[in-house]
Image 1 (spheres, rainbow, N blue to C red):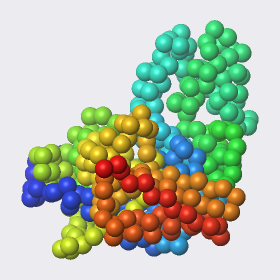
Image 2 (image 1 turned 180 degrees about the horizontal axis):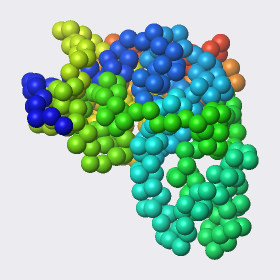
Image 3 (image 1 turned 90 degrees about the horizontal axis):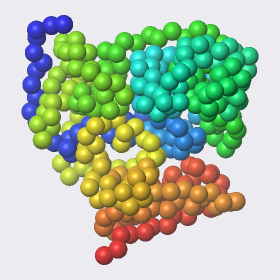
Length: 376
């Protein structure tokens, strides 16, 4: 640790935060990155929904199509595995090893809080070892694992027993689950078994913080903790004083950022591009304070849908509505519903972007866009 104090910056407005984050997320201009390189830059894409996350590549990279991304799951250069916040993410195997190692406490905390009562008389290490041996024989679903483990622990519910390897082991959801246009049972095996070699954690918490700020910064310590699921991270930020600078939000929160990173500012009267975000896009989930993107009107819209995580539409860096997509035979329909009134010019931009996304989902089909404006 050092006594050197970080350089203080002027307050950063919510609009500046929105612009900087969109820039680092490659949502202002697509980046010349491969799907694997983009996934690595973003430190994974949340991907518990088997297919919606493919939209996270649209507009972030140049000339990418879902089928190319899908092939990375097949050749095992990308994996879907639980990591940050104990949720499924798309990651490179190397990142998966490091991120799961550092979030193991999050997984164990989740296991205890959700299933601790059912598992109070079970030795977690013994069950974990047996499950690892079973998975070494072949991939299995949680139902299969639970049934097999229940033969040795008959007094514990199979579904609860299956949660032990789910949260105690680095388990990959194997294809065809998650591949574009395909489906299959949710079957698991261990990361090492899947990639065919031992994958050791390579990154410290401090290195992960630096990468988080490169993709999501500037951000607060609480933002990083909300993204990762970790707690008590201030000492790690303190250890990085020489490599970080500080700023403040308009509300007085301390923001951290890399001392050596491009921080462009929007030009006067610059209009940010319309962007469609998938339901678990990290852009909306990577912060404790989500006001840099999410508006009160959008939050109210989400409440009306009983808290369901919506797919957001961004206009000028702010959430203005939600979207859904459906493919039927030879047609691709994208529906947009807004929580505020937009000008005719903005609606035209939204419709054009919606058409492009619908065509990206289903090339060669008839594309239709349906717009629903809020009631007066």
